[in-house]
Every structure is written in C-alpha cells, then in structure tokens.
Length: 249
Ligand SMILES: NC(=O)c1ccc[n+]([C@@H]2O[C@H](COP(=O)([O-])OP(=O)(O)OC[C@H]3O[C@@H](n4cnc5c(N)ncnc54)[C@H](OP(=O)(O)O)[C@@H]3O)[C@@H](O)[C@H]2O)c1
Image (cartoon, rainbow, N blue to C red; front, top):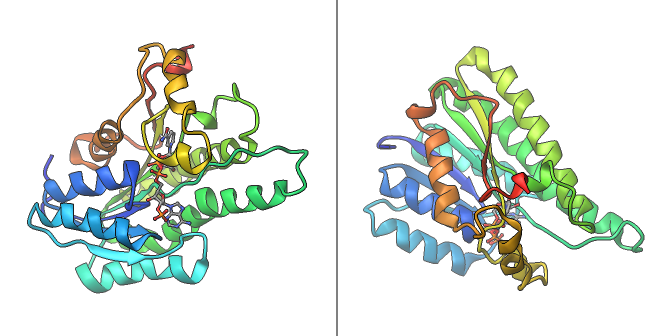
C-alpha cells in the first residue's frame, strides 16, 4: 500500500494507535502531520518517522481548543501544499458517573475532544480533501454500540455521535469523490487505560473477547491504512471492527 506523494494528518499521534498509524504511513512514503499535546512523545514518534526518510510536521495542539485545532489544517497546507488523508484519532476516556457533581465536566471535555474537535478539523479539511479526492478515517470504538459496561456514558455517547457524524459526512462528500469511514477497535493495549486510572481493566477484557486476546496498536493502524488506500476505493460510510470478536459476546 504505497502512500508516496500523499499527505496525511494524524491527530493523537504522540501515543498508542495514532503513533503506530503515523509511523506506518511514513513507512509507506507519506508526508505526515503529527498532532498531540505532549512534546517529548511527539518528538519520539517524529524520530521514528525520520528513520523512514521522512521528517513529519509536528504540531503541538490541543484539539479541544478551537484556536489550536484551527492551526492543524492550515499549517499542513502551508508545509506540504495539499491534504489527502485526515485521520481523526485523538481521544480521551474517563470513568464517569451521572450522579457525580463533576459529571458535566467529564461530559464536556470528552465531547469536545472526541467529537467537537473532529467536526471542526474535518470542516476545515473538507475543501482540501475535495481538491485531492481524499478521504477521512475516524477512530471510534465498540463503545459506540455496546453499553455493557456502566460509568463510561460520556465516552460511549461521544463515539456514537462520531459514528453518525461519519456516516453523514460520507453521504455529503460522496458527490465530490471523498470517502469517510470508521475504525472501531475493541480493547487495545495502549496507555489510554492507565490515563483513566484503569491499568488492569484492559487485560481483564481479554477474557471477554471471542478470540481471547487484546489488540495491538499496529493492528488498528493496518485497518486505518487499508481504509485510506486506493484498495478501499469502493468503501465509504463503513464501520470496520477490529475487536477480537468483542461484539459477538
Ligand atoms: N485503546 C483502546 O482499547 C481503544 C479502544 C477503542 C477505541 N480507542 C480509540 O482509539 C483512539 C486512540 O486511543 P489510544 O488507545 O491510542 O489512546 P492513547 O494511547 O491514550 O493515545 C491518545 C492520543 O490522543 C491524543 N490526545 C488526547 N487528547 C488530545 C487533545 N485534546 N488534543 C490533542 N491530542 C489529544 C494523545 O496525545 P497527548 O496526550 O499528547 O495530547 C494521544 O496521542 C481514541 O480515539 C480512542 O477512543 C482505543
């Protein structure tokens, strides 16, 4: 899957699935924009990309802050001259509880990062994607459709909204030759669980998948690259599961 001469933005590229995705796109010849808030982690991913002969554009930005998010597409166009693929991957995950006094804080920050930022960045990217007949891959979650575990209402709501947003986007941009798809991972070994104070939760989920395993970031990156590639030219509005059979259970 060659992405030579393609320009790709990956949000949440400083860690986990986004880092694996950015490195893979670079390996396949793309010019990549890495977006995240943590400079030292971004620098490590940039160094990995550079090993494949391409220096990425590194943008330190909090996607939930409009003024910072607005720089992402503009700086990418300034640097690389066009945009072929937008991967909206940045995401946060909190334990919440509808009864807790701070519920609206976790709800707002989750929706702002996992959904609103995607709408803003996609809105700004759309005219450039129309020019290149490019595509969008949004990273959702099986939580968008599965309500098995309580206390993740904000996360699950944000991802359900993302799914509907992406299908609507696919329909709206189809006449322009632009595709939009979702990847919905099941549990994947990344730091997202540690950040939520749930370090052991992900290993426990192993027994709850049909294949009795938890995914790796690289496996999700492979699906993202497939959807972004010419091989998926007839795929739009789809939700690709990579969940080790979690939703079968
Ligand atoms: N791991 C799983 O089991 C799993 C399952 C289903 C879906 N997902 C989805 O996969 C995506 C990636 O998650 P992951 O597991 O790779 O998590 P991760 O390792 O915690 O990485 C999350 C990435 O998002 C970035 N990010 C978070 N908030 C941001 C903000 N406001 N502005 C800019 N960047 C931000 C983080 O960078 P900084 O902290 O440097 O900003 C980091 O690069 C998320 O959308 C998540 O919901 C993950």
